[in-house]
Image (cartoon, rainbow, N blue to C red; front, side):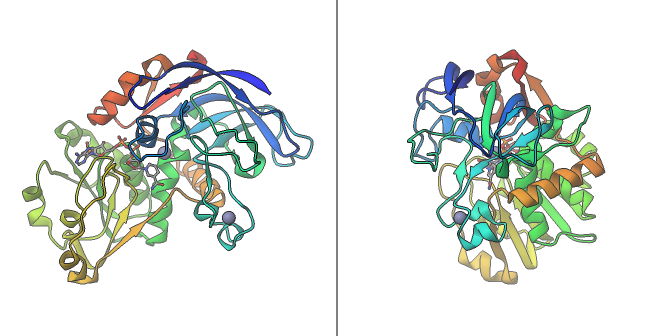
Length: 348
Ligand code: NAP
Ligand code: ZN
Ligand code: ZN
């Protein structure tokens, strides 16, 4: 066991504060990672504040981790000391169910093991603690290979925001000529724009933030709709093939379903605290469908990282010291970030 520095929430109301945590001793297939950067996902806020229920404190959030391998277990074959690696949202799964065996371990029939706020599968009773910490110890099967880059901080958000938007856009076969709308231009949303543009789609941002109008085109978006209320969307009924919903706050699906043309798909990745409403009338019109999507598999995450390296796709980030985390949360809730905070872990 090693004691390492971390930042944790001690209950749903308390601000995050420094805490020392234990990392397990290296097992045969474990990789010990010194964390350089950790992105700040809205799921970190939902969990730290127990908005989904089920938080067990202390919670150390953080699942967009980039770091250097510090040590490896005797059986590790894929990684060596000094290598740059990533750890995303998932650190284990049952490995034997049909979903795990067919590279869909994020949909493990027993439930995947999250990087934080999950029970380890080894029966030890230990809980997983995330990337707002100096180090993490992870089984090599759930570690990603990161190619060297000048912008490792901009790579970190790919581990969640990147894969969570890449995977459903791929599943929906987004390609040249398709009309794609992205709703909610935050960490996930801005990556969705970058990927949809890279896949050749005609991309529209739908945002509640006037402050994002000017710069959305820099992400490659072709159109921007400022939608502070439902009426703003009325002229766009049945105009899109795909709407990707990356909204973190409570909202209804119906207004976005109405935007879909024949056979259009609403790709849902946002996970607000309360259940959104769906009108079956909006659903049957144009034979629309709603498709939910959870992160992506390790295999697809590696594919996405390699794609981003090749296409020079990074997250647009604001690097922060870990002590700024509580202000960062407040700014995210207000939508005041373009588009992802990344913690420089040397500040811990
Ligand atoms: P984020 O950076 O905070 O962005 C959320 C965006 O939602 C905001 O930038 C804002 O965009 C929009 N928004 C906020 N309040 C709104 C409101 N009241 N009405 C309409 N739009 C609103 O969050 P994120 O990290 O991208 O995460 C987005 C959601 O995805 C979270 O719920 C998170 O838990 C979830 N998530 C899911 C998965 C998965 O596997 N499915 C993985 C990671 C995260 P505008 O300023 O453009 O309006
Ligand atoms: Zn996340
Ligand atoms: Zn499984």
